[in-house]
Amino acid sequence: MSARLPVVLIPAYEPDRRLLELVTALLRDAPLLEVVIVDDGSGPAYDGFFERARHLGCTVLQHPANRGKGAALRTGFAHIAGDHPGRSVVCADCDGQHRPADILRVAEHLDRHPAAAMALGTRAFTGPVPARSRIGNHLTRVAFLMATGSSLRDTQTGLRAYPSRLLDWLGTVAGERFEYELEVLLQARKAGMVIEQVEIATIYQEGNSSSHFRPVFDSLRVYAPLVRFSASSLGAFVLDTLGVVVITAASGSLLTAVVGARLISASVNFATNRRLVFHRSGSARPGLSGSALRYGSLAAVLLLLNYALMHLLVLGLAVPLAPAKLITEVSLFGVGFHVQRRFVFAPARRGGPMTPGGEEHEEPSPLANRTPVRVV
Image (cartoon, rainbow, N blue to C red; front, side, top):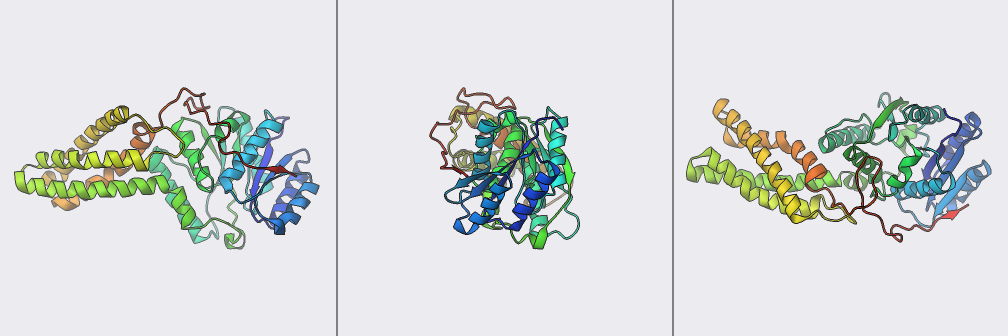
């Protein structure tokens, strides 16, 4: 590792003894390490943990109320960028899931790969892993693959290393709670950034009982873009399928039915996706003419693929019309989501500064997302 050690950033909400055990072990292995902890509104009952962390040599930042993991990370990034310029950052969880050796190893890996935008500590999910964690990671991997076209072994890991040049960009990524970390990966892949992966130990202590992840509510926040897209696509699928059946019965032409039904369902799907699915709060909605042209081009390509696959299934393999339609739409679902998110409905550019991956982003207001923070 280079002479300039990274800064370890630990977001903490209602921590227990494992936070202090982690800090003690880290500073024992690397005495010159800087550790920044963000108390995300844990309340007076937990002041003792943070006071002991301060005595161990940590910097403690405090939110007056709980804001969520994403907000805590952004607070830490802003502090480190200002107080420790030029230092890389390693984020770790406070619940004992990350060994000090793995934290330092992920930081060293990033140091050896200067072109990388981040290094992820990826778990193999072997051994006694809680079912919700195993299933959740698998579902998120599939969702990420559908959204970006690329695969990551562990999209939910909290152990991540970032170079100093990325800290300002990290402060612009949307998301207040657990969805923030997935959004970072989505935006990084969209910008063409290099993501390194380092295998680490899979540790779940006491069944992961200390996790503050709410399986239903937080999962909906994490998967929100894909859930909205799925609902919109389901509505378009139902409308499109009814149109194919009705127009086929009326005209007797499969080509006429596929084209006519797609024109109707695509119009409804375009309006829904533009207004509700891919429009992010705080970002500029893309121009109507530009997004319509891109959507039309995508729809034309998907229409050709749709007809070719339907023709093969119905006329070539004698598959009944309704099952053939279902197979076709499921096959093309991931392609449609990925292209629409990345190209068709990408936020409008405002001529702002360039992100590390070469994408422009809107310059945030100086008063946006200001968080009262106390440095202990």
